[in-house]
Amino acid sequence: MPYEPMPFELHTERLALRLWEESDAAGYRLLVGERGEAMPTLEEATEEIRGARESAPGRGIHLLTLRRHDEGDFLGYCGLVIGRSNLDEPELAYELLQGAHGNGYATEAATAVVAAARETGRSRLWSTVRTWNTPSFRVLDKLGFRRDHSTADEKGEIVWSVLELR
Image (cartoon, rainbow, N blue to C red; front, side, top):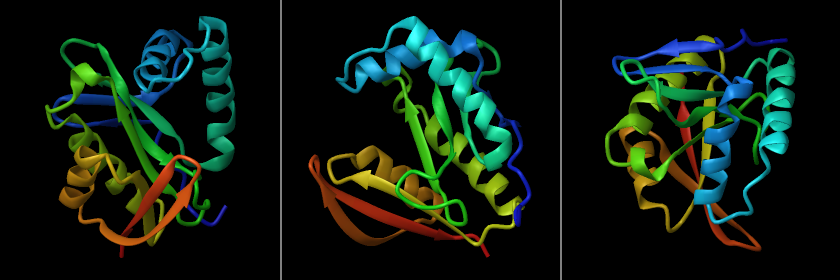
């Protein structure tokens, strides 16, 4: 692999970011439900987490769950994915439970993930955000991403933002 692997655990002032555990399935189900999608069964969510854990070492990038240090509560996830991009220039992805919005957790977690991405030796990250998602654009702006171009799919317009890491 031409890149160093991303750590399976990161820490910030308020957050612990860790590789998914099967016990995170309930939190994952809530995230999916808050999106307005059909909530997976606990068994389906656990199986999805199991698959993600097993494939993470081979890819060298992954999503990490977010938990507050003091409370230990599940807040969502943040990490690097192939998504609409590729392994050389992965996407920064994050999603938090609605109750965790507005506290700076996404920015804090994403800052740690961007720093970890830089340490892997990559030179560029992407993020794709739907035009209606103003809070995500604010996070990306704080991180130094710049809007690059737009594409569309069956759900509407997608804005591609890029961050040069070198």
